[in-house]
Amino acid sequence: MDIVLEQVEYRYAANSPFEKKAVEDVTFKIPEGQCTAIIGHTGSGKSTLLLHLNALLKPTSGTVQIGERTVKAGRKEKDLKPIREKVGIVFQFPEQQLFEETVMKDICYGPMNFGVSEQEAKKRAAFWLKEVGMPEEVLGKSPFDLSGGQMRRVAIAGVLAMEPEVLVLDEPTAGLDPRGRREMMEMFYRLHQERGITLVLVTHSMEDAARYADKVVVMHKGRKVHEAPPRELFSDTARLAEWGLGVPEVVKFQRMLEEKTGKAFPKVCLTMDELADMLKQGGESL
Amino acid sequence: MSNMISLENITFKYPGTEKEVLKNISISIKEGEWTAIVGHNGSGKSTLAKLMNGLYFPEQGTVTIAGIQLNEDTVWDTRRHIGMVFQNPDNQFVGTTVQDDVAFGLENHGIPQDIMVERVQTALKQVKMDDFLNQEPHHLSGGQKQRVAMASVLALRPDIIILDEATSMLDPAGRAEVIELVRELKREEDMTVLSITHDLEEAAKADRIIVMNQGEVYREGTPEDIFAMGQELVDLGLDLPFPLKMAHVLTEKGIPLKQNTLTEEELVNELWTSFLSK
Image (tube, rainbow over all chains, first blue to last red; front, top):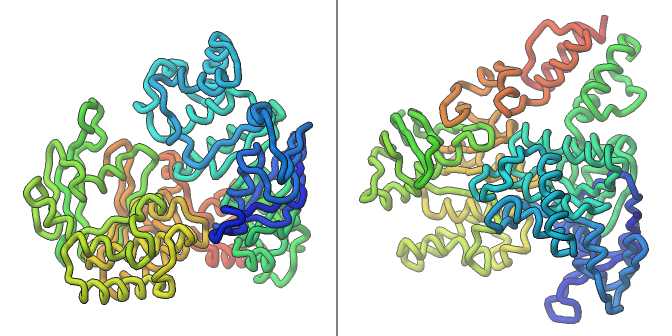
C-alpha cells in the first residue's frame, strides 16, 4: 500500500484570528515496502504531516491517498477505521499511553477495538511481545512495574498487534540509552525486512536516516524542500546546513579527511565500515 | 574548593518496592565543577537527582547540599540552592508568556515586584531570550523552550543547576544551544553544574564524569579517563564518542594506527601520518 500526498496544506484553527499555516504544498510518495525518513528542524511541520498519514488530520487543501482511499480537503469522510487499522502510528514516548492493568490487556486493546476476537487478540499479544524482545512472563504483569525501555516495547507491541501494513515512527528512540536505541532501531528494521512492513521514520538522527532509509524527505518551514536517497542527500553538506540540519558524523569525518588529503573521495560513505573499506582499498591513491 | 553536593553511603528503594535502586553511593561535587552522570536506563542516575532535591529521602546515608544536611526540616532551605531543568520542555511551562513563566518561581518566593521585573529581564538576557518576553512559550522551538526553562531557574539565583536529561528531547541544534549556554554560565557565573545524560557529546564537555551501573558508581574520572574504557563502556549500555569508534573500526579492518586519539582532528592527523601519506 502506497501513501501519496498531493499539494497538502494544513492550517491550524483555520478561518479564525489564530489561523496558522503549518504545512504547505507538500507532495511526495511513501512507496510500499520501503523505509522513508522524514527529517527537518523543530517546527518544520514534520509532526503535522505525520498526523495526515492515517487521517488523524485532514488537509485543509490537497489530497492524501492512503492505499485505495483518498482523503480530500473539504469532503466529509466516513468510516476512517480501516485506514487506522492499516497505518499504525507510534507516537513519541508511547509508554505514556499505557493504561491497562496487565500487559496482556494493554496489547489486546487495540486489536479488539478493530473487531479482533479476544482469543485471537491474546494470541497476537503473546506473539508480538516476543517479537519486540520481551519475555512471555510479563504478560500478566502491570505495565507500570516495568522499566521505561520495557514499557516502550510493550506500547510498540500494542501497535504491532493491530498488524498494520505501514508503521509510522515518531522519534522512536528518544530518551533511550545508546544500547536501547540501537536495539530498538534494529528491531524495526528487522520487522521491515522480514515482514515487508512499510516504515516511515520521523527523526532528528541523521545517523538513523543514513543507515535505514531508502529515501529521505526534508521538511523546512512547512514545505518539502528536498527528497533523495541518503547518499545523495548527505553529499551536499552546505545545503543541509541552510535547513538547519547536519550530516552523520562519519560524513563530517570524511570531509575532514578530504580536506587534509586535498582530494575528494569517490563517494560519500554512510557508515564507518564503508569508510574504512574505502580507505583500505584506496590506500595512498586517496 | 568546598563541596557543593555530597552524598555519603546512600542506599535507596522506592516506597513499596524491594529492589535497591541505589546501593551505598558516595559522591561529592565541588563548587564550580561541571559533573556529568552517565549510565544506562535504570542505572539509578535520575533517582540520584531526586534525592539531591529532596523529592525522596534515602533509606540510609546522608545528603548534604551547600553545607546543609538534607532532611524533612531543611528541604526548603536546600532547594533554594538548586535549580532543576527536566527532560520535556513542554511539561515545565506554567505562564502564558515567556516573562510570566520566568516570574512564576520568583512570585512563589515572595520577591517584590520591582526586583522581580529586573531579575526576569536579566535571566532572559543571560539565556539570550530577551527578544521573546511576550511570546507564548509553546510557539518556541525545543532549544528555546529549554533556554527559557533555564532562565526560570537562573532568576532564582541558585548555586547549583541540575540538568536531568535536559537535552534528550531536542534536535542536534537545540542540544548544542543548551550545552553552549551551560558552558557560558559556568564561565561567567562559576555555577556548579550537574548533568545527567546519555549524550556522550554532552558528557565530554564536563570536568568529570561519573559512570553509574546497576545502582552503583562504576567509575569516576576525567572524560579522557572514562572514554579510555573503550568497549567496557559499550558493554555497560553506553556508547563511545565517534573518533574512538571510528579508530576501532579502522584497526579491525587492518589499518594501522599507532596513537590513541580522542578527537576527530587527532584521528585525521594520525591517519595522515601513519597511513595515507605513506
